[in-house]
Structures are given as structure tokens and as C-alpha cells.
Image (cartoon, rainbow, N blue to C red):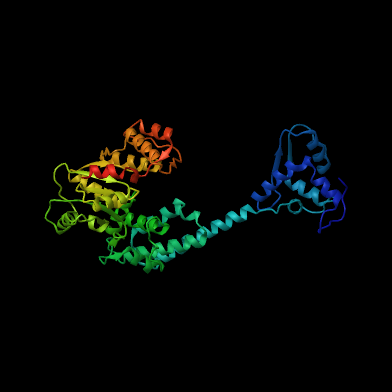
Length: 432
């Protein structure tokens, strides 16, 4: 390395650059860069290099203008900074590392800026709460503190975090407008409340960050647990006089003949007598408590085509269709039927998602497999092959069938998916 010379702030000359980029200095620059970026780009403290090789001994000795021996070297960053300034490099450690690239990142400044942004978010949230009716509710202070400590909003960018927490405060202030710990008796539709607080009717949709924050506040206000599933979330909304959307999702039924005297049960019987399917909403199921003949056997299928074919052919057995997934509205109806003493038989698709759904239904309701055992699969597979039906390969990791240990190995060996329509004629026979 050349001796001291005048500083050249424009760029390093070729000889100096070649020396600084030699392999024997690579670990030093890496360690110094890490330390500076943590130190606010200030050359403070030391770096320790272990297990030095001959190439590093030579390069460090030339750079520091002193012999470097042994397997370990401890290098003072202030001394290194001074040495670089008085050498041919002519600039301090930070400027040298910038020249060698890539640009330095002041991680301390980034952390401080992020902390300042978080502080501004919570300052704005507290100010918003103080300006509303939430300031009179002790649970609101705990709610804000829980959110601050929980880290949910810390993972959002500052603009999103400020927007969401402000909207959450305004939503809760709308629901709890005065010192009474109970919510306002005025009922809100969830979409209406969302539009009022956010400008969008979907702002409080299930699963949104805003909805989770508001539900946490409602739960604290009522001393309730935070809901773990969709039915519990809807119950908590209703506790705050907010009506969730209970009419969009439906469950497809056919042939239900409850024996009770309510108009709903009479309507189901009449539709069953006319071989008409019925779509029931969550709103209807909230008040429908069907009385059923003792030990009524309910067939449960996965695909709507089975219900359609049953109606077309005038079948009489009661049928509930999951439409491909056990959503809340499906489970709500099946729960009501189970409470009424019904038993269940389940059939679905012979593919891995179909087996997973079948496991859920059979285990929750102790449902019998309905033509869903290994011999049923083998028969249908052989029949589709004999008929020249195009074969759909099984894909994805296998799912064990809880009701039949032979089904999954059989499906894996044969290797084809069979949708419920492949067994439609057999299922209709059973529904006769």
C-alpha cells in the first residue's frame, strides 16, 4: 500500500482500489460494514477476525502499517478510520466502504425512524380515542395497549396502521356512544356500519384486519373471549347490535319433511312434496329448530348435481348438499338436524380434498360412509374404464380415510379421481 498522499474525494486510483479489494481484506470490510451499519455509520468499537490465513496476515499488516501475527486480530475501528484518512485512500472508513460498495445502510436510523413512526401511530390512535366516546370506557385503554403490544399493527406500513386503528376507534365509538358499557340499542348491518366507518361496505368483512381489531374491542367491552370461528364471530357482532350478512351463503337441501307446526317447517314439507330443492340461509337457520321423525336418516352429498337429479327423478329421501365444502351454514343445518335426533350417511368425491371433507363430516356427526368404501371406489373405477370415460389422475398428497383403512391405499394404487357424478345412478337408487 502506498504511503500518505493528498485526499482524492472523487474516486480511488487503480492501484489503491486494487489493494483494497484484494481477498485478504474481504472479511475485514464485511465485519466493518456490519458494525458501522449498526453504529449509525460511526467508526466506533472493534471488530475481531479469527482463524486468519497467510493472505489476510499480509494484507492486514500492509493496511494497518503494523505486523499482524497470530490466528486472531482485534481491529479498532477509530484507528482504522484514522489510518485510512492519512493513507493513499485519503478518506474515512465510511467513505471507503461506500466507494467499495454497496452503499451503507444506516440501520440505527432506520430503527429510530420506524420507532418514531410507531409512536406517531399510537399517539394518533390515543388522540382519536380521546376525542370520541371511547375515552370514558376503561376497556378501551386496555384495548389500545393490547393492540400496541400485540404487534399486529407493527407489521403494517405506518399509513395502513394509522388508517386501520383510526377506523377501528371510530367504529367502536359508533357502537359505544356513551358511558353505558352496553352498545347502542340501534341495530346496524355490518355492511352499513363498515360504510359509515370506512366508506366501503366491505371494510368489516370477515377476516379483515379492521374486523379483527373491532371484534377485540367488543370482546373486551363484554368480558368475552375473542371468537375462534365464524359462528362465534357472528355471535359477538350481534352482541354489539351489529347484524352480520346472513343471507348470502346458503345450504342446499332436498326432501326435508320436519313434523313441527311452524310456517318454516310447513314450507319445507310443501317443497318436498313438490320435489323442489330449498336453499336455506343462516338467517333462516337462526330461528329454524326442525322437529324430525325419530332416527330420520339424512343423506349428505358433496355436489349439487345429486340434489338436482334427486328432484328431477322424484326421489323421497331427505338430502343435504355441502356444495364442496363444510361452510358455516352447512354445519349449522347439520347441527340442528343432529340435535333433532337425525342420523347421517355421507358421500363425496373420490379425490384427496373429497376425502378430507368426508373425514370432517363423518367424524363430526358419526356419519356412515355412503358408498364410500374401497370396494365402491374399485367398482366405479373399473366401470368408468370399461365405458371409456376419460380418466382424471389423482394429484396432491394422499389423505387417510378415517372410516376405511383400505380406501386410501386403494385410491393411491389405482390413481384416478372419481367425482360424485360417476356414482349418480347408484346414489339415486339409495334415495328412492
